[in-house]
Amino acid sequence: MKLTQKVSRLARGVALTSVVAVALVGCGASGPSASGGATAWALTGQQTTIQNAFKTWNAKNTGKSLAVQFFENDAFKQKIRTAIGSGDAPTLIWSWGGAGNFKTYVDSGKVIELDKSLTDKYFPAIVDNGRIDGKLYAVPNNAVQPVVLYYNKDLFKQAGIDAPPTTWDAFLDDVNTLKSAGIAPISMGGASKWPQLMWLEYLVDRIGGPEVFQAIQQNKPNSWSDPAVIEALKMIQKLVDAGGFIDGFQSVATDNSADTALLYTGKAAMILQGAWAYADMQTADPGFVSSSLGWANFPGVHGGKGDPKNVVGNASNYWSISSDATKPQQDAAAAFLKDGNMTDAYIDDLLAGGGVPPVLGIEDKISAAKNPKFLLDVYNMSKDAPAFTLSWDQAIAPAAADALLTNLDKIFLGQTTPKEFADAMNATIK
Image (cartoon, rainbow, N blue to C red; front, top):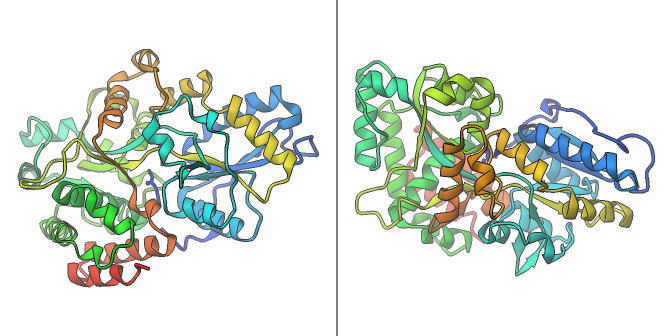
């Protein structure tokens, strides 16, 4: 789902005319250079940090400069697939790692193996999402991005709720309490579809543990019919029917941050979103973030097998190097990954934007950053999680991910049953 829109994350069929274009940055961004026109594509959500990194790199490395272009989340996903398939990928390819789209790049020989020394400073669990079959093909370029439950402290207080819920039963009680007080309980960007997935990911984990999705990821027959999946879908539909989500959530988009705006403007009391949403809210309404924003782990489910400390989300975003790039372009990209990615200044920019780099030994930097409590909580949540499950639509094959978002949307809209959902998804298993 973006660290900075996690979103991440994550609808299909968006017209390429919606691409937010942007700048080609820094020395070497126009005209020939020794790097042979090396390029990178990235998401608008991390634009400031990435721009600063490439500007600094290009100024000091004119022979190995890279031009970077930015796109919105959903449009990027469609554009990058087309570019990679046609052999026109940028030199540096942005991905979410894991075994979904990223694995297809590896399996089709579209990215090159990287030097293992590039991983020394990162969390080992985060590095693992850049490996396929034990070989390194991607390194982190962004903050660690668990999905958390944000809440508006002022609306909770108005409804008489003292603390965020730690169990699903308490969560449902709070939903009813908020509705009785005339407050919309939950905001969600239903128009973008992928935010709906976070509810299923967490509920399946809390009910059945991470092993349920691992079976799905391994393409085990009928794994979508697992009782934990069916029960989670039923719980989602009950929550929708109970009016848990704000009226009109199906038309709320995430890429323009309309979903988080409903939280900080007092229109809804909660939102389930990635750590990237914190940065958006800090930019849009710093006063709200400093005084009225709360956050918590997703609640546990009574009798469930999943540890309430488990998290789902995007371990990070990642850079890979295109195998279709020329040797000078590849050399420029490799040099940047070694000496221009996750530098001290890069880390400081991420922290200033509300992101937590998956870099070892930066606790002091985090403590000195603005609003360190959230950053430290995310750092420790990610570091200490017994299981960190990658966002499902990035962890499974692209065709299956498309089917997942489509069929889950039907669940939220009441257009299909849990069994019909499971049957449709089992049909995607190969």
